Length: 289
Image 1 (cartoon, rainbow, N blue to C red):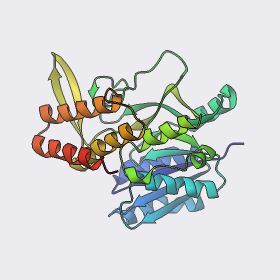
Image 2: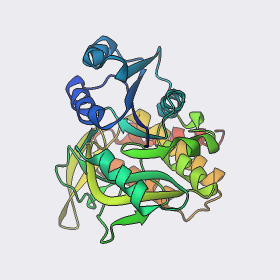
Image 3: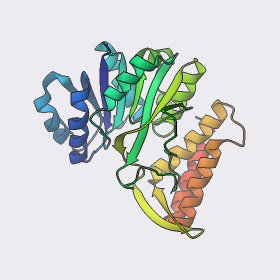
Image 4: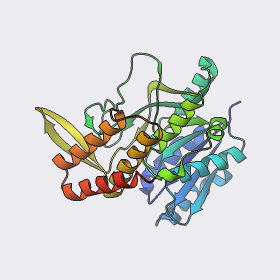
C-alpha cells in the first residue's frame, strides 16, 4: 500500500485559496505538511489546520528561505513519516477530487520503469481556460492524444515525486531559490536514469503569473502573464545557470523563454525599464551562481 504525503509552501497566501487547497487535498493523502516562509498571516494559516489534528502540520521558517529550501523540508519531513511518494502544491493550487487515485492507479497498473515523477495537465484559475497555448510566456499544456507522455520536466505544483528518487539526486537546489528549481531537479532526475511522466488529464487548478494583460498580436488576442521585478531577476539569473550548468549552448529553449519574457515586458508592461533592468541584473548574477 503506497503511503503518500502532500506538501504546500506558503508565503503570505490568500487564506481562502489556501483553505480550498487544504480541503481538496487532505482527504486524498496520508498526511499534509505546510512549510511557511515567514508569512505575515501565519496565525491565520495555523487557524486553518487546527481541526485536522496530527494529520496536517506546519513547519515555520522565520524568513523566506525560497522554494527549493521549502521543498526539501517537505521531503525531509515526509521521509521521516515513511512516505513513499510526495505531491507538492503551490498555496493557490486546488486538486480535483480523484487526483491521487489517478496517480496511484497509474503507478500500480502501468508499471513504468524507473518512474520518479508523475504530473498531469492543469487548468489556470485566472485564465479560465484549460488550453493555454496562446499565453505568451506560459508553459504549453496542450492535451496530447495519448493517455500519457514522457516529458523532460514539469512544474512542482501537482507533481508527485518518489521519495527515494529525491534522495538519490540529493534534493532540490537551494541556490536557485525560486524559478527553474523544478527544471534543475528534473534534469538531475533524468541524469540518473529516472522517467518523468505526464498523465494527459486535467488534475488541478493553478495560477500562473501575478497579473494578466490582454493584448493583440497579429490580429489575434493573446494573454501575457506579468511577473514581479523579483521574479524577473531570478528568472534571468537561473536561466543562465541552467544553460551554463547543463552546457545547453546558445540555441536552447531557456534562452528562447527568457527572450519571450523580455519582449513581453518591453511591449506590454507599464514598468518597462525597471523590468528590463531586473532581467539584466539577474542575468549578470547568473554568471557567479
